[in-house]
Image 1: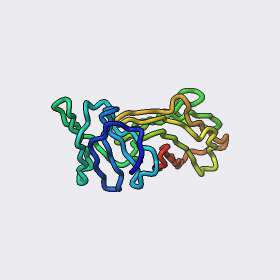
Image 2 (image 1 turned 90 degrees about the vertical axis):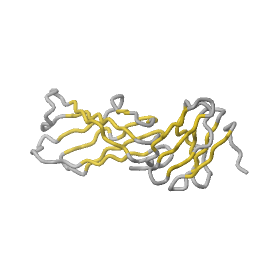
Image 3 (image 1 turned 180 degrees about the vertical axis):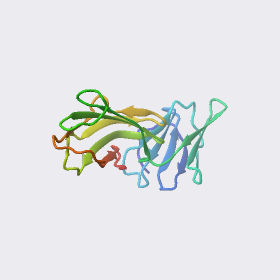
Image 4 (image 1 turned 135 degrees about the horizontal axis):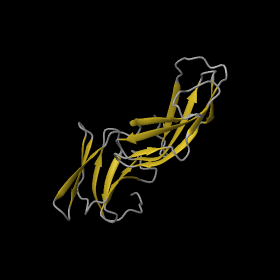
Length: 184
């Protein structure tokens, strides 16, 4: 027996990784528990109308959510967390010409999307390039709903370029972490 704050539970199913999904009429939502059910559930989807006997299609990674109170079955893409997509990168340099030049400070805004609900997304930008200093390396994106896009325009990454910078390709790494511990 596992106590829960959720009410009017109905459907129960498991995905390929052993996560357990449960539908709750009390909140008209679907939640996911870790495979050992040791942590509080993560909200997967909401706005249903009496989510009932849910089913997980393991081959296509689709969660089917029948609604008892209306004649609708909703299908949710359950690609695992961590499958982030970079939708756009915008740069704001000192003279607004979009050309990174020696001695400039540059703000970087990265737009992300995710195919799965991602709670509390944080990002860290790094480089080992000796001509580039990352002045502001961390950004918080908040919760990414399924299919939503978020950016770090409220707290852009900031880099400074060396006065001795010569034209070259620079390599950056972007580490994304969710509050439930997933990393990409």
